[in-house]
Length: 377
Image 1 (spheres, rainbow, N blue to C red):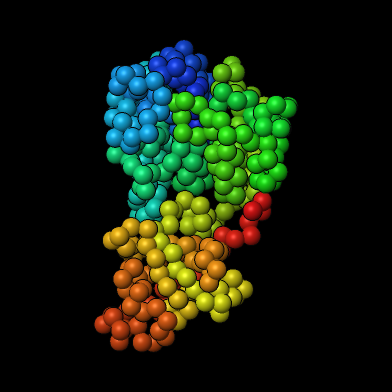
Image 2 (image 1 turned 60 degrees about the vertical axis):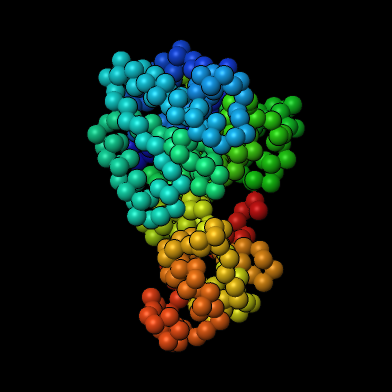
């Protein structure tokens, strides 16, 4: 690869590579730290998304596989995270590099102000030559407010930074044909074609699997990031990929050179977790899909929330047709309860109903993205 500016590369390393039996493989950490140092010396800006915290904490709890109980996973993460970050910090420091721990939660991605703050923090760390080491804050995350597996976390970081390349290191050497029984597929560009080659297996210490990697890869490629899935136990794998060798399976970037407005739209489409749903009539759907209009309250038929307390101003929601199927996402200008009160009314009577107004639209067109009809869906 030959980018015009410094290459920004996200390296995500799975638990099955770093801690295959539950204990951290220090030799693997040291080898990969050396490869990261080589990339850094060559001018590549590297962000590391490191799994392994939960896996390293499980033996301390006397557990030999990923537990179902959330509190057990949180406890394992709290015990294992210092082990993982200490190993990376030590291995990188021996090579003259500074490691910087960054734990993210779903709220850091969902709310634009926190998203931008996280973005600035990571960019500052890269600017001073540090290696950000990112993980979800598993010790406080729980079902419903979790980012999910670290493959998805890598994709969200690519959204944060506009990364050029994301490398997903696994025990697999790429996507193989016929559910793992055939040869490695060097390049894939269609999600449906790729999905038929995927089995359901995943490691005993991780939450991902090839299906999660495919989903993350295609989302990242939509964001303008080239993705490569490769075997993390292969010496020199990072440099070989950055140098353009045919290693693993590559997912070419679909978009490139996104403007700030385009990146905001991609964040809405791919990064935020919907806090609710708006059901709209056929006229509103046509106006949004065909004319790029804002969503006015008159076209809203109903509102639903994921949580009992509803959702706040600025929350992300799915926009659905009368069939209940989502076709767009957007950021709301009104709270859940407020939308319930103005559903079906004209924009010029919002103030009369609520006693105030935050504008004519429930979702402004600048904060709305169509999501149906993407390639491969």
